Length: 396
Ligand SMILES: Cc1cc2nc3c(=O)[nH]c(=O)nc-3n(C[C@H](O)[C@H](O)[C@H](O)COP(=O)(O)O)c2cc1C
Image (cartoon, rainbow, N blue to C red):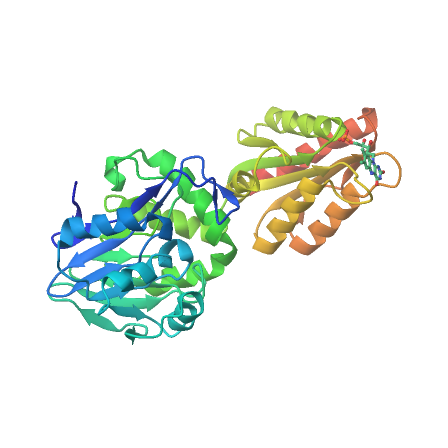
């Protein structure tokens, strides 16, 4: 077996998951998922997080491939989410004398999930754990992406074991380090991971980045996705951009439509945006494309135009699910337009305007609501909505 080294005594021991369809049983994994874990083999041996429990055999074999019969002294628990903590019980069974390292919010979770209370070492912000040549220093980063989340900074080599922060969807297909693989693929999967999983906690991410800004980080070893050693600035700048809601010029148009009338309005708006020179236009049918991809694009582009057919006095269900998710995520700093079709008392546009009130984005034009099929006056209003959005984008 290959031994993958981050530094002299530091190894990658993670696994690839190409079987699971949905991460957290919700977010699509067309390219799979890597559960990363690391091993520091010094005077003391430290394991950095574990993996999803179904991979325990492969995981133990990865560890023993490096350690042989040597024991693990410490398990550092940066994050308790079960895709990383799931193998803790098995690791404790394999290495009964192991000391579990975490912060004060880690151990109640450890007890709740796994009924483990023994052999714990509680550390606080800035505390150090010397291993020999290598020393770990700990910083809590609450809500990036759980309350107990922390990072461990290995000071000798400048490696940040960053928990879920800077993670990406996608397995590591041979390439494990950023300079061994195609960055554009992982940039997309990193953005989708950030926006879907961590994006709700953007303000917390900003606080975490400020807290870590004094560290001389040479490598970032997250719990998912590539290890960043040649492009640390790239990944840090992307996280800063996304978590501060900086967007690019472009518009996401999403609609819910049964019989095509609302869809037609979406196409008219999209065409006029293109006529006005907007190059990044993404049109999605909310019933077809998973929220995961739409949310990622909403984080990316400044404009959002959403349409819904009236459906039993409400929005169309897939649009309702999407805008509810957006509201829960608290995404900020966008331009908004609203449209839709109805036949008797409406419900789609009316409820989309409630969303507009709640989300407090800047509404660029009055809602465009058509009865049945699109006719000349509402066609013109769709054009005007697109023009208003283009004007605002140009003015930004
Ligand atoms: C199941 C169902 C429920 C509907 N509920 C409403 C409603 O509550 N209020 C309304 O004005 N129109 C309602 N309509 C009519 C549609 O909203 C209307 O025909 C609209 O033009 C459909 O747009 P679409 O072609 O984009 O699907 C309903 C239609 C269907 C099939």
